[in-house]
Length: 87
Image (cartoon, rainbow, N blue to C red; front, top):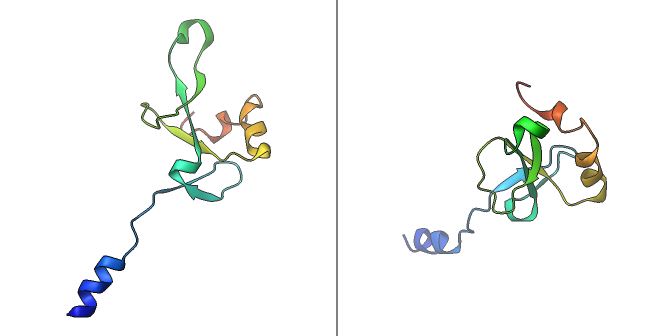
């Protein structure tokens, strides 16, 4: 019984993880950048890709790590659109 009490107290807190859509590596949610397609000004520009700093915007999010390689891929035209589901 004493071991159960100590075991629960020493248990680590769960840290949410997300995977980069390009390099497929896992990162803590707070350490990865979330992108969302915005419908703002859709009539003029179509859907635009925005950084979701608070990670709370509506819509499907795309997580990209902060490596230079992956950040370059997100800016290339069409690279993230191939990752979209159902589009």
